[in-house]
Length: 385
Length: 141
Ligand SMILES: [Zn+2]
Image 1 (cartoon, each protein chain N blue to C red):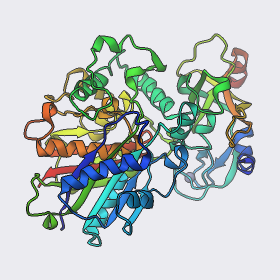
Image 2 (cartoon, rainbow over the protein chains, first blue to last red; image 1 turned 180 degrees about the horizontal axis):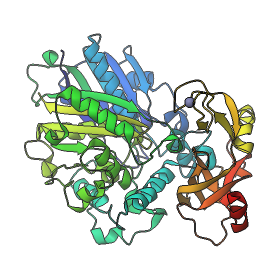
Image 3 (cartoon, rainbow over the protein chains, first blue to last red; image 1 turned 90 degrees about the vertical axis):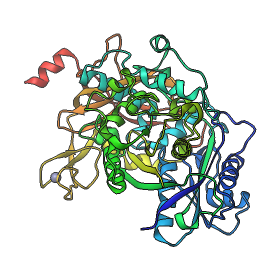
Image 4 (cartoon, helix red, strand yellow; image 1 turned 60 degrees about the vertical axis):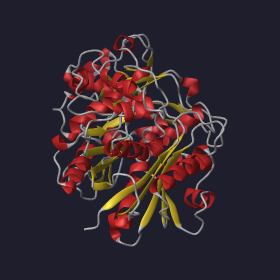
């Protein structure tokens, strides 16, 4: 079978880019990825984005971005799966190369939140929920995170502040990522003192949504330029799984079923077990999601994901490092672009260019982004070719 | 405007009408026409009692557009006596502490106010309030 490889990566910093438009953000990431790939010309563009129609009054991003990036004429369109849009766009690009119809694919994730402010942004983000039965009640993704966190503590008798290790680790790693939104470590004591955002979820339990764009170029191994100066990285496993859209429709809301299924499928395809993964870029949009994801993926028993954080197992030197460049919490969460940031960061690790955050001799990476509370889960396994 | 959309949902919103599966007797809310238990068609209407208990909850201050007038408000996952779970705001809480397992019952209230955007219109529907002790006793009979 054809090996699909990542030939180039690019990203912008994550933050409030008041001076950059949606198309400019996307272009910056694309330009960097194309430069990194050494002149490969893409024939298809897949865009991961959730909010542009709502917050920028802009649909039709495929042609907008292709045209603006000097790629007029190529196949181009958006792939949307809320917070999993970036991973889903990567999956579309992977399938395109794998099918044999396309030789070189460009995938870009882009999100522009700062064209609007306040309640309008919250309303737009809440469109990832069931509009008729969740959002109509004034629910937002934040309240989903808070309710799952409360139930998690209740059902498993988890000690207070047990999730502190997740934001503390994320911020420690974000400190040396030049593209992270927050580049300052936080002390564990601070976790117990910060204000509640949505009880029992505090300021450090929720990742900040912000602007950003990240891009990758995909191709077949045999088409890599002979003078390519990077370690080629292979997409060894790719899987998308869905659960119910609403939390209320699940027999057990603390079971991230789609996260479990897509990790299982991606690992099976890659022929690797989870204990062979050198690190795991997961969705820590809320601290409790990181715990539930570690449990769903099989790194911890049900109700014990928090122990990995408490014992320092998720740190760069732990048994299963997560959020190695800051995760959603410290790098920031540019919703539809997040899945591509995870890929770019995993490639940095596998190429051995992750600087202070480098995991020694990392060979296998597990990456997962989530739409909603694992309503959609997209998982990829990357390996050194 | 979204008037037809809200009109279409009035049975569910005002009377908590869902479905019962004619094949396996599963109670279904929100209605979905295909039984999540057995996969067969389920279109028989079923009116829920409106009683249940709190599965989890939280209180939100930074409300989305159209909900700011009632912020801060408490939202919950309510496990209905007949089985399904619904997402709903809690109301008439007064001074009492909400807790997991607390018995609640459905009432009809205003869900969202008219906002300043073009989607802004009044929407009414179900919320849940704590059950009084005498109601609990009556429900037990
Ligand atoms: Zn049935």
